[in-house]
Length: 67
Image (tube, rainbow, N blue to C red):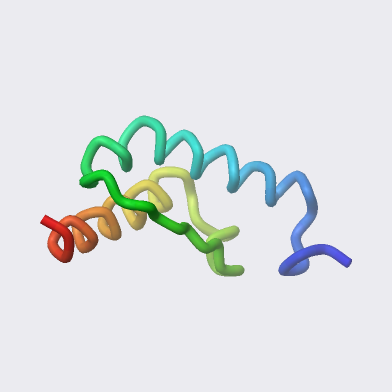
């Protein structure tokens, strides 16, 4: 049974995109804390740039909580 009704190709694309965003942008902006990223079904409809924007917004909010 496909997870979230998505194929392995779609799931792997989202994983690759998230790894790239975290590697190039996300980790530089946060203090050294553990972070868990949960993918929701609506994530599959986002473009790479929108996903990056959403993740960086989350990083900003996290930085405010953990200065």
